[in-house]
Each structure stands twice: as structure tokens, then as C-alpha cells.
Length: 500
Figure 1: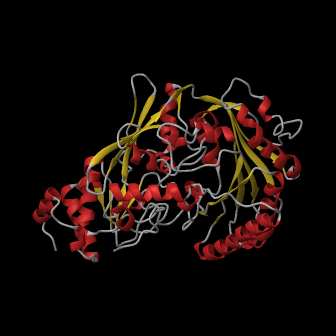
Figure 2: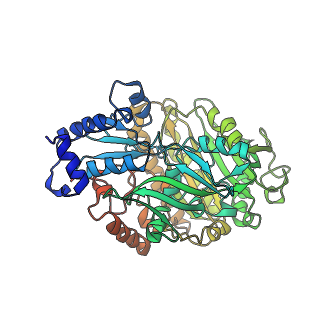
Figure 3: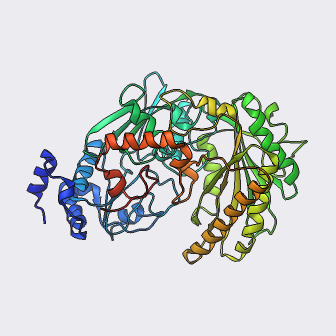
């Protein structure tokens, strides 16, 4: 067992190689005690009210939770865990519905960024500096009275940092590119405890890697994000009813093909099924337009008279009011969840094959308590991909052509049904690929990290050259693989997280 004095010496000199220590559970519990002794207001244990709040989402039960206030405290924790080979997890906003993506069980320690929640706006109003614990609803609410906007998550109570580390796409992406295109600078803590920044001019390779490369490189503690004037836009959450299949599917394929000509527009179409309430599929969409019209020409094939609404209408909103109106009213927010991503060519026949195969295969899940799913299409225009270039680039390797990003988002009540739901979805997705191939289509290689399930080969989808580049950057900034072996959860450029 190490004394506090010895640990202080280790942390100060860096003289203790992590390879000299083999992990035992005692090292985790002793590290929790060390953190509590030095940071009593930032270390919480099981049984405390704050612990229960921090452990929500995955409910994995870490040995303790460390809630640093700044990068210096994060640095001390990383050095401690690295020296003692203590497994840990890092939570920003907990974006992924994967049990160990941002939490850890009792063998490790959770670093929660919940206290790193500062938000400041530069004097010229062009940059918003955001702590890594800030979530999108909090940021949207802060920006609302300032009449400022950023390109962020379309809907959800998730973290700002994780959105960008996963290569996020938002309503403003036609105009401003994928979310990370709007990042000016990251502040982060490296595996050796060094606090540094990454931007187009400082550590540009790290900057490139962080914009879609996940958590293999550092712990992000602050993001500086491009802000733009005008928080209001025309937005709608609309229902088309249960008989809209033909015009609906054609309309949203047309959006991907042609809406890029008007970069103010964005959509997200959702075919929903809630079998305990309605045996039929229902057709919904989010419509977004940051121009001056509530009836822009670009939406002519997804609005009346071609595709009239049965519920909902376009209203002038901000992302703050949109989030409060739409997300907080969703009935399945507390359910167990999965996200499963597939990218396909922008083709009406391919889209319909994917929809039909999915719902035919999962029909038996109607007996699962509380089951609900949405089959979402994000219509990705060629212009989104072009707009994402520049500002140091990113590793995503998106093909410069219109495409359909499909996301299945099943949810249900009981953990005992996890394996059943997962097995049926694995079967459905195998059939989707099989049926597409039989019709002459192939799924695209890209996988969107933020909407991919556990174990998905995300980085293979970036192409071999970019994947290797990510590995080389990881080796440069974390040669001991602290963020691969000790930092559990998330997608790793060198493979799955393992202890040892």
C-alpha cells in the first residue's frame, strides 16, 4: 500500500513506471482514499446522494466518483491512475447508450466532468468556451438570451464534448459542416498529465484526430466553438400519419439529393413503431430552416399538398425552446436503449428495402414490455460533406456524394430482454445487408461513432489510411496506451479497452 507522501513523490517526479505495478482492487480503493484526502469536496462514495446522481445512466457502481473542477485536477487524477494502473472511465455528458461508454464498475473510478460546467462567450461573440461537463440543453439555454447559436446536437440531453469527439452532425451542418468543423480549440490532458491545447496551429495532428477519433488520445477539458448570430429558426416536429409510406420515402430521398442547394435546411425523418399503443407504423419528421420563410421551396416534397401534416407545424423557435418542447416530452427517455447505424447510397429502392426488412424482422418484438423503436434517416447532402472540409480536416473520410444515414433506436423496459432485443436486431441488420446486396446495393463503409452500437468497427469505416494515422497519433500522444488499456469504454483506435 502506498503512503500519501510516496504518491506525491511519484506524481511529482514521474519516476514510477506504470509497468512496475500489477493491478489489484486495493489500488483502486486506496486511490479513492487518496483522492478524498486531497480533494474531499470532489470525491464521492457509494451511499452518498451525489454518488447516486453521478452513477445514473449506466448504473455500474464505480468504487468512487471524482468530480474535478479544472484541468489541473484532471491531470492529477490521470497521473495517479496511470502510475497505479487503476482502471477508470470519463464522463462528459454520457452521450452513448452503452453501459461502459462513460461509466465503470467497482474495480475502477469514474471521473465525472459535471463540475466542469463553465460557459463563456468571447468579446467579439464569435467563440463560446465550454467546459467538458456541459450538456447541450444547458448550452442552448445559456446562448438563448444572447441570440447566439452553435452547430450542435439536434435533440437530446447529451454532452457537448462527446458530440464533437464522435464527429457530430447537427441542424446547421448543411451550412457549417459536421460539428467538429466549428471547433476552434480543444484543451485536454495527455496520458502523462500534461495539460495542452489542440487547434489548427497547435498540435494540429491531435486536433485532426479528436474530431471524430473518440477518447483514445486525451481527456478533453474544454472546447472553444464557433458561434454565429441569430438563435431563431423555423422548426417542426410533424406527423404524417400511418398511410404516408410512398410520398414520405420519396420526399426524404429527394431532400438528400437536392436540399443541399439551400444550406439553411435540414431534416430528420423517423418511422416510429410503438406496438403497445398502435400496431401501425407512423411517419414523422423534424424539419429545420434557418432562413426567413416558414414554407421554403426546399421542403415542397415533405409538406402539403404533396405530403400534408396530420399534426405539428413550423414555428419560429430557438434550440433552447425546441429542446424543452420536444425532448423533455418524449415518453421513452428512461427506457433501455440502443443505437444502430448504417449508411446506404441515396436511392429510393435501397431506402425502402432497409425499412421493409427492418420492420418485417423485428415484428416479434411487439411482445417485449415497453418496446418502442424509430427508424431514422438523416438525409446527408453532398454539400454537408463539402462544408465539413477545412479547419484542419477530420478523420471521417466521408464520400463526397449524397447518402442516407439510417439509425435504429429501439428502447424497452426490462434488462431481462436485452439479449433478445439485441439478437433480433442483429438478425435484422444482417438481412438488410443481404437484401440490399441482392438488389445490387452495398452499405457504405462509414459508421457514425455517436450512433453506433458497442463493438462496431467504427475506425475501419474511416479507411485504412486514416485509421493508421489515428493509431500513429495515439502512439505519439499516449505511447503507454493509458487511454486504451486503463480508460474503459468508448471506441478505441487500437481495439477494445482491456486491463493490463
